[in-house]
Structure formats: C-alpha cells, structure tokens
Image (tube, rainbow, N blue to C red):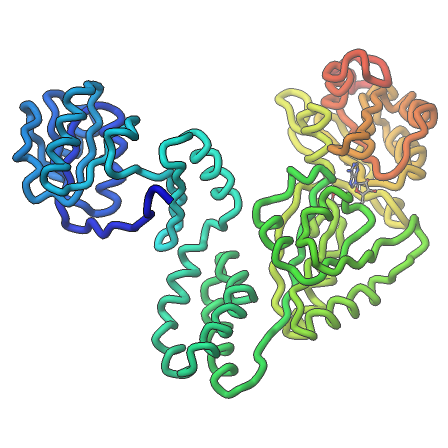
Length: 473
Ligand code: SAH
C-alpha cells in the first residue's frame, strides 16, 4: 500500500490553496464543506472565489506565492497551471512537514485527493494512487448507484443509539451481533426508505428485545415493481432491496434478467399464474408472504411493472398490515411507460393527445368500461390485456364511433430483447396481430400518437404508416 487513506478533521484549521482558477475553486468548495479556514493565494480569482471572498468565507492574498503563507497551515493544495509555482509550494510544504496535494501531479504530491461519495457522516473515498483518476471516478459512479441516498441518516440514527446500546448490552460480542442484525434488517430498510420515525421505533424495540434476551428479529416485505423486463429499468432502491432479501416471491411477468439481480443465495419462489388457470391463488400468495415474514425473513415480493398498476398490490399490503408486518413499497416502471419509451412513442403530445388512460380489459370488467369516453379523440388509451381480448376491444371502440383509421400499435414483450411493435389502425390491427402471431405479454396503444411507432421503426417495422390527425370518421 503506497498511500494511507485518512479522514482529516479540518474544522477551523487553516488550509492554503495556491491558484485561483476553476480547479482551485472546486477544491475550495470542498474545503469549505469540510469547514476549513481557507487562504487562497492568486493574482486573479475565479468568479466563485470572488463571491466567497466578498462574503468573507475565504482569505485572499493577491500577490505571488511565498513560503511563509504556509505558516500555520495543516494542509495545502497547489492548483495553478504553472509547474514551477506548484513545485515551489510542494517544496515549501516538505520543508515545513505540511502535506501538499499538487493537482494532476502525483510525483510532486505528498497527499492525493480521492474521488468522494458523500453520504455524510458516511463518506467513501476512492483513490488509485494517481494511476488512473478516471478509473477512480468510474468506481465512484458505481458506488453512487449502489449506496442509498439516506445512508448518512442511518449512520446518524445508529450513532444516536450507540451509548444506549453500550449500557443495555454490556457484552461487546453481543453488541456487535445486535448492530449487524439491525443494519441488515428492517430498521435499516425503513430508514433508507425515508421513514425515520418507524425506523426509530423499530430500533427502540430491537434494543429492548435484545437487552431482555428475546430474539427480536422481525420479518418484513418489500413490494417491488420489477418494471417491464429490462433489468436496467429497475430503480436503485429495488436493486438495493433485492440484494438484501432472503426470499423472492415472483410473478410470471418478472423477467429472468430481473430475477438474476436478486441476492445469489436468496430463495426464489415462483407464484405466477398460468394463463387464466390459477396455479397459485392470491390466497396462497398471501399465506406465503405471512409465513416467510413471520419467520423473520426479508421477503421481496417482485411484481411486473408497478405493483399498484393492475398488480393486486393493494390486497397484499392490506393482508400484511393486518398481520402487523411492515411493508416497503418500491414503484416500478409500468409496462405502458416501458413500451412507450422502447417504441419511441410519446403518450401525450400537443394537438394529438391531452391525456393518457391505462385500462385493463381482461375479464368481465371489460363490459363495464366507459367505452364512449375511451373512444373519444385527442387522447391515448393503453390497454393492458390478454392478447385474446384484442378483437373485443377494437369492436367496442368501433361501436362507440372511434374511426377505423385511428392509429393503433401493439407492443409485445416491451423492453425485452424480443420486443416487437406492430402498427396499424383500428381497421387492421386485429388482422396484423394475428398475422404476426402476437403473444402475451402485450399492450395495445390506441390514439394518434401510435402512428409514430411506425415512423420510428422504419423498415424493421411490422405494419404500415397510417395518416395522422385522422380521428374523425
Ligand atoms: N403491474 C403491471 C401490469 C400487470 S397486468 C405493470 O405495471 O406493468 C399484465 C399486463 O401488463 C399484461 O397482460 C400486458 O398487457 C402488460 N405487460 C406487462 N409487461 C409487459 C411487457 N413487457 N410488454 C408488454 N406488455 C406488458
């Protein structure tokens, strides 16, 4: 190891920055965040630095660098574009045993500035010993995506309870086990989901339980929207929770690629329904949720798209709430939004669609829909459907005066590698779908915007161009 990473407490300590350009300005910004006293030496100042000087946040020396300016400094940064000056700062620092970072010059530096992920008070610093700052920044970007935004709040929550834990759990091993369980469990997931009060309550309970020797572990359920299929469309929170769950209950619509993002050793339980014939009933799913969470497991309930759009998510949270099991709901990209993006088809568009409606047209419910309003112009209607319903949907729309020329598109397996888009109009979409042997899952998008699907897909596209603006019969 060529460098020792350390965290410097610079609060109220003097730091010298030589240079007044954009690079120096960024360093000063960081130093001010770390509450250092900053002295800038530069004949000219970047506008941001002028602002800090005028506000009295930094001390400014307008002349040349002189070694005595290092007097009393805990640390120095040389950020001029002149090598000789930078090296003079480094030499003066070495003579006074002050660490100096020379920007972009590892050889002259006695200290290197890491790439930072800031979840204060939790901070991750990444360095490559100057071998590849770009690589350090890439690692930083990966960590940014990996580390929940509220990790700092979790750290503070734990910090506030440390003293109490020390008193209640005098044995150090017992205390370590307590914290490990706590930070892997519902206190952490609640805090990271922004539910500070609930997290605090669970922490207090867990501490009491641990002190009285009770097991204390409580299960919880994450109701996670898995999105339309492409795993890169998972939310960061979905990925984080999938990485920490013990069990995954997943539907038929959850793609293999999404499922692969779950913790490797998590138990995977398929609870999908086979086309119409219920392989696993909703009641059985409820029972499985209660059973696993009741055993103290962290259960990820993965549903295609968004759990609250035609997903029966509401029923599942009601059952869990009645059993006193905490649930975290993570939204997902619903199939309509995934399909629209993948088919490059805006769902609203000035002059063509002022509103968008998501409808499910499966089952007996279809009869009760307000077909007159769904058939009206200047809107987009997205039908979540069993493919077999397609002829009925089109017949209903036509019977309520939607013109035969109204554009319609089917997006099959949206966002997955096998995605297909079939474009046409109400008059021919059924026939085109049959010709293309469309299979579930697929969506039907009706409205003038659907004509764009054909344009966007050009030659590879199944279907033909349909005139736009043709909503009048
Ligand atoms: N909760 C889900 C919808 C469940 S209903 C969501 O928010 O997306 C199931 C219907 O969603 C399917 O019949 C199909 O119409 C649609 N669907 C789901 N995933 C799809 C996909 N990848 N491509 C096209 N349609 C999809």
